[in-house]
Structures are given as structure tokens and as C-alpha cells.
Length: 271
Image (cartoon, rainbow, N blue to C red; front, side, top):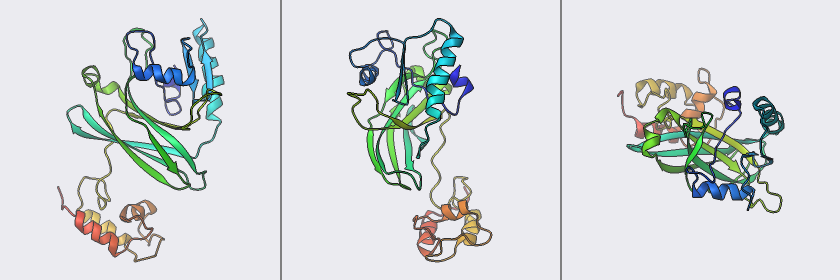
């Protein structure tokens, strides 16, 4: 119910323990927060709030989770962003890239990036099963300063059950404090992101300013308008800030001959 009511605010990973859908990763993740404890259900909100057990009344449970878990964490501001794209390697094998950033003016920090694959509406019983954990990639510890980003790519090969239910495949990534929870049992999650099927594709090569998969004369027309020379960091008339940023192939803040060299190298013509 919470996932349906707050699709942009809730990134759920449902972990099974003690049944036929339990996994080694799931047990380890459970022990990360509540070592030696096997009480279910246990809900952990952003690594900071733990709720053990449940009410018999569904409405009461919903309100409790919403008010004392989801809403409590939504009030906490974050300066971390996560964006994801997917690129097919072959068949059911995909490279998933997460871009983690600290916003300008934010606070430098080290985060541990987790990336997992879940399958929604699985298993079929009980009927309220959502985002069941299926696969985990290796974590990555990222040291980021304000205004800085890092890309992490991991390869996932989806199982037969998942591949036959592609519309229910999701990738969930989160950036968390890379510290052991003991003795407090908490490790704050600064941001999470959900990427559903079909996965958004990576942006085209630098020069594909209209994002149509090629670098052609249409892109050159935009590039020519944005070209302004070395050390000029303000878009010229007729060039939007987004177009100026896309034309800045080397990321040095201007659109000059260095960027044109890259544009020319990536030129493919209409395809």
C-alpha cells in the first residue's frame, strides 16, 4: 500500500529469512541490523529506524509505518543523488551503471553503494509480496566531495523466473554509511533510487545533442550555436544551459576546439 501511495519516496527491498526464498545475502543483511535476532517482520527505514513485529489491523500497521517510518525519514534532507541506466550485454545479462553525486554546497562524505535486483509481485503467495530480493552486486565505497560524482558499473544476469517476468524486474541502489552498525545498530542511508523495466539507456556519445542515437548534422547545428571558445563558461544566445553542458565534451566548463575535436571524432552521420 505504501509503495502504491508513495512511489517516488519509497525504495523497498523485501528480504526473506527462514523460508524457501531466503538467501545468504539476505541473512547477512538481516544480521547487519539485528545480529542474532530472527523476529519477522522487521522493517528498517533508511538504516536508522527499526520496527519489529506487526499489528493485526492492516490500517493500523499502514499508519504506523507511514507516520513513524516513511514520513520520519522524508523529513531528513539529503545532498546525495543517484541516477541509473542499463545497457544490455547479451540476452539476460545487463550492465547497470549508477551515478552517485554530492550536490554543490553539500557535505563531503564516504558512502557505500549497494546495488540489488528485486522481482516485484514475487512470490505469488502471499499476494502482497513486493520487490523480493533476487541478486546483489559487489558494493563500492565512494569518497565524494561537494559537487563531485562517481560512476559504478555492475553486471547482472537475471534468472529464468525473473527474465520471464521482465516487467517486474527492478534495480534498487542506495548510498549508505560504510560503517558497521554495532553498537548502535544504525548505518544511515543517504539516498536510494529505483530503476524499473525497461531500463533507461545510457546517453549517446558526446555530440549526440538530440539524443537520437547518432551524431549528425542536426547535432552539429546545435553544437555550432553553443560553440563560444575557450574559458567562456556562459552559454551564448540561442544555446540553453543543458545544450551547453552536453556540448562541453571534456567537462571543463566551456565549448571550444577541444570539444569540437571530440564531436568530430564521434560524428557518425544520420543513422
